[in-house]
Image (tube, rainbow, N blue to C red; front, top):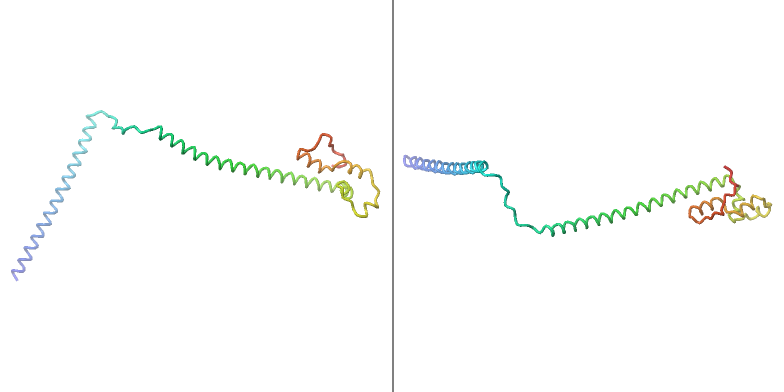
Length: 179
């Protein structure tokens, strides 16, 4: 038993010596690295105070003209794409604005036609537009208002002609419309 106990004691002693030896070597390595770092920082600080500030070494010159040309070309390509989108959106906006204006003009024309129906009697408007009623128009005598409305176009047609730009200076308001 003493022999087994002695062997265990010797093994523990060997293990303790190896652990102490490895820890010592690691401690020496860390201290060497720390001392080297300290010396490096100390030399950098001492060199800063001793030497004047100088520019660092510049790498060899690049072909700046080539680089500038490629950058300009990329910028132009991006701008062309943006300009195309801008032009497309601008034409869409113009088309929509024209459509809105046409709708507004149509609304005004419809309002004027409603006023005209309120002011003039329906048979006079039908006679002015060239449509005839089947039996009533034949039985009723023709009045001066009917001949006047037949000889001149209605105000709605004059307004449409003026909006399209085909009206002439001889077209005048007939004066039949009451305000």
